[in-house]
Amino acid sequence: MQIIKLSVGDRLLMKKKHPCSSEIFQVMRVGSDVRVICCGCGRDMTLPRESLEKMIKKVLPSDNHQI
Image 1 (cartoon, one colour):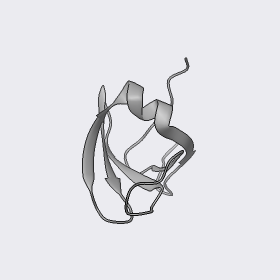
Image 2 (cartoon, rainbow, N blue to C red):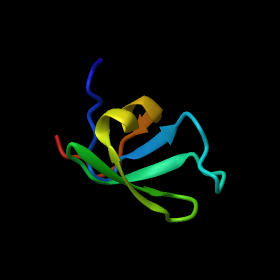
Image 3 (cartoon, rainbow, N blue to C red):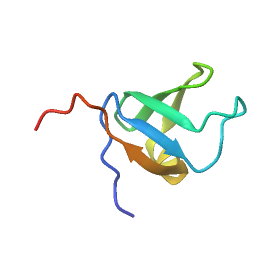
Image 4 (cartoon, one colour):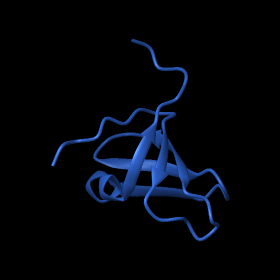
């Protein structure tokens, strides 16, 4: 399995919706655990990277990436 590149500020489109009906989360911290916040209700979650990567449908990069 390939590791998905995540950066702080990226938005994640998930395979399943959150109970608040939003399916977009924003990355707040990256590491072996990834901290994400639901863009619908503001719920803050810290998830193991391996399980989070299985839930991601698409990564929507933030506008402030530097090359």
